[in-house]
Length: 256
Image (cartoon, rainbow, N blue to C red; front, side, top):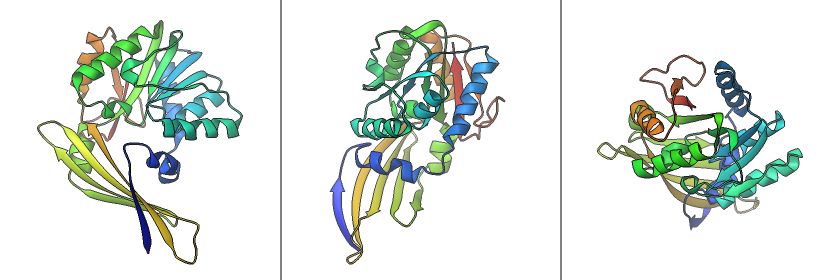
């Protein structure tokens, strides 16, 4: 196997492989769970912001269901993929490249989403509180925010200090994990191999990225939300509206 090496910062090359590597994710199921949370709290939002929207998996589904959605992400590469996806689906979705902690919108919205562990990528309490304050500012008075996190249990005990891999015919990924117990931060060193269109030489392109995720507890996030002006903070499992267990891998939150 011939390999070309290329190293980049977070969510650059990964953006163009993301949907292929995440092909097993059921975004419709996520959208159904979000709408179940809306229904539980009697919310019928019309306008919506999807933070850390990535390649627009959730954004495009919510737009196709009739919501007026804006997508925000810090990665220009992820947004490029999201825009192409929306174009192919015939959806008109405004996408904005912004750091969520410095969020600026033209007007408030009825609902704010942040799915697929977006807040785990904020590593310190000050920046996360700043983000929550921005969300409170741009949320209509009767609005709701819904987000998920990778749980402290998942980051520390499941991913922890393990090595994992995903492999198919055209793209493979290996990631080496290192969890810092003191800082509660998981370092993920990702290596991708993409098969190029060169049948004679079996050429693969190699990409390397390093990601960091903070393991936030329910108690920490609830306190920060309340300090930022939210109330009625609720948590749910990934597949139901029941309270998550301490061994849940993914935890949903809502706050109003």
